[in-house]
Structures are given as structure tokens and as C-alpha cells.
Length: 140
Image 1 (tube, rainbow, N blue to C red):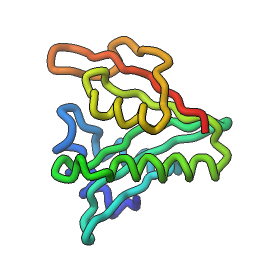
Image 2 (image 1 turned 30 degrees about the vertical axis):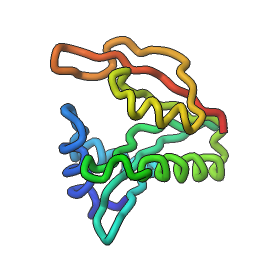
Image 3 (image 1 turned 90 degrees about the vertical axis):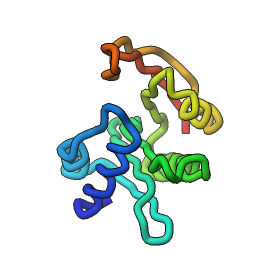
Image 4 (image 1 turned 135 degrees about the horizontal axis):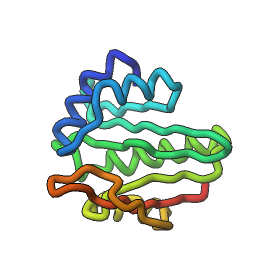
């Protein structure tokens, strides 16, 4: 991902989530040197991921596929690529948070070997207040 991709990434983010990241969130991740990747199909940006790392651990901050392209294996491939890159960079463990209501994402993460290890209470904004986050981990 480059700064020139941020508008397309933001457009996907806004279509995919009721409480999307902001342009500033993505620019901050790029400026911090996080591993920010995009996936394209037919010259169009259709997915992206953001991974931070430190002290041998990685944190999947965002992984999103445009709603019109979901269910085609793009998210699975993006996660596999992120896991392979993380391992190559010496990351031994990956963590992520996911909404317990996002069963589709949880199924994907479990299929990729992530396990639930905890719960962060009130982590995500929600229409009726806050929603918890399921914390998941994958040893690489």
C-alpha cells in the first residue's frame, strides 16, 4: 500500500464497516512503517491488510475485502500472505481482535489456525454502545 492507495482503501473500508477507520488511521500506519498491503483484481484494488510488529510479535490491525468481492478466497489469500511475510520477518506469534458477531471472519481465522485466547470488553463501537472483541492468536 502506498499513500496513493489510501482513497481506494478508505472507500472499501467505508463500504465494509459501520464504524470505519479514518484516512488519518491509514496514513498513520503508513508513516509508522507498518506492513500495509493491497490486493488487486483486474487493476482494481479489492482488499488490504495492515500488520504492526515488534519484539517477535505481530498484530493484524486490519484485513478487509471489498464487500462485492467477499466469498472468493481473497481474504484467505491475503491472510496467508501476511502470515508468510510475518514469519519471514522473524515474527513468531500473530494476534488479532475480531467482533464476536463477525462469525464469517472468526471461521476464516480458525481455519488458518488462530485460536481464541481472550476477550476485550467494550473494544469496538457499536450501534447500541460498545461490542467486545475476541482476541485470537496464531503461532507461526
